[in-house]
Image (cartoon, rainbow, N blue to C red; front, side):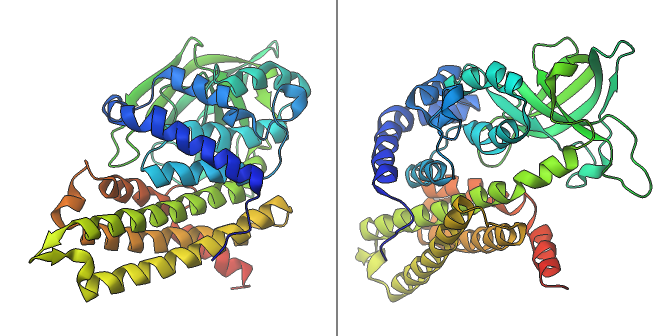
Length: 385
């Protein structure tokens, strides 16, 4: 079916991104996987292409385009080629909304130009060892100095995507104690300079997928953070985090759909070329039926994400909408990609085939941004259950 969610500008942008991936990413992607992240100059190249500034207002050097459709195009084209742009998705998809919504004008003038160019890469640090999804239970603290000029940050974070290469990290920390009545009270966000004394990057964590997206452990030992680098108001972080969750979950839904779509294309090409018992695998009825089911599932996912993109652009994409989109697309994509890998036989388990990378990369979609179980709880609550 013809898609109507994208216009001519989106499709022209798609062609640019597709050519860029083919010429500048695919040939060197194995090197990135071995290193664990792209070279730093790659992010500056994304800045030159304008990818980091799409949603940034023109007064700060961006394109000033609202909505998430151009970012969706990037996500779809990366999946189509079986590659990723490292931790750039966190930079624009997770961090940027916080800066646009909660940073002061002075902070935007200070940070956004380098954000757009790729000279300043960013990450966000929420999860702590032992707390998982329980953000209210975090123990990283920031104490205001006696003269009121800076915070003193202490604690540790884990599973921080982009943590190895980041120049600034949005650290969620406790600036005042929680109360028995409100465990969410007292959380704040500090935008921490990673060159600060006492700031340390620990292990680069080895994941089963997303091999070109660096994920790290971070620690803070009496790190001094100027009060000018407090994002928004002190003690308001929990509400800030909830504000960005719908678009984060929409992004994961789009990524899952795009990976499933790519998996069907990879499998279709493979079964046409692969010969078994004197004929192509595509000639077997089982192959045809499996791919027919997968194609139908991909169509359904596309309808969900397109509706979500439109709703987000019109400002009426709710937390429950995001939960439904993420739950359906991530769970369905997992089934589709698994079936497509099965059609590859033993070769589907080999990392030289893109279907194997998709299989590994996709698995985390049912975990990060809120697990499938959390999504079900949100949906049930929206139903009055």
